[in-house]
Length: 402
Image (tube, rainbow, N blue to C red; front, side, top):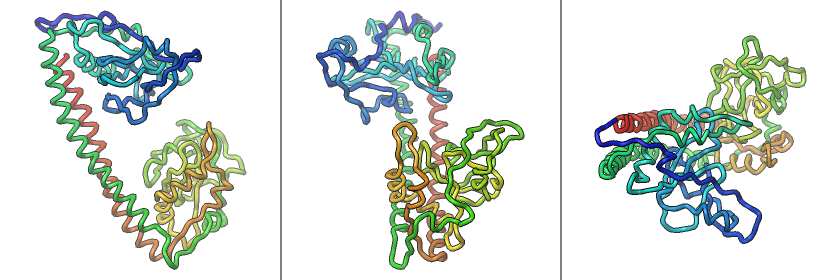
């Protein structure tokens, strides 16, 4: 225990208020409801996608957010992102509440502990991984055991020292965030330039041919969904590529999952040659990758359609055309379904593609490859800086609180 510091718990320092249900009884009041989607990766509150709902006035009366409230994510999360994320509400005006997937901690006495200090300390606890031990999963949703959360011990130094710690952390974090923001700005600018190049270079021009997708694929490789099985890592199974593996230009053996289910004869037509475009058509539609030679003999999940093209179509050209804003809009337009979004094979076959001579296709691909490699390098740089910034914040928090 540091000299002059006392210790308490979150439950002793705060009152807990449960989140708001939409409600059915009048009178109603229209308010902005803070949801898990409003929690940013940097543990701040985003007002960009606030959902405004008509809620029961009686419920809202006891759940109106006040400046200094701490909003805790009590349900949601994932394996990589445990529940327990906490953000500080600092808005003084407006009508806002919080969803039933969250709870609010409202400090009992600001003369004992400041909201900003408690927010920083809970952030330290979360980043240290303490809340992961307090969560339990039911029906795929992670829930925090709030009794354990409320029993977390909290250091309580004098208010003047709390303010000094908050000022120090704010200053250090601002410098770290600026470093991360600069890398993100460079990445976003490169992405914007790449998208502009895709749009301009792939815009159909005089002399270009236009044909439907079914007319440019190889006649021996008809357009078809992959096999149904999801699959796991099982020795001796059949290698299967899933939509989640389509996260870069080339898919390699390292991205494979396996299934022990045999491939029926009706799905043998989707066994890969190792030179196809792999198009995501279920869930997240419009994602695109290219199969490498190492994938020869493998198969694809039902969420993917493998496409092998005729000789006069340069595969990489169609890959970039599929990435273009114009074609991504077409894919979105062809996507149907409310629960499971997908592109039907019948609609996919009739999508039109435009292309120049094979020589011009190759020239365009060379230029786009160069631009994309720069974007990829900046993405790697941003990812590295982002990880280092997060690690640095954790180190500073440990320095202060441990």
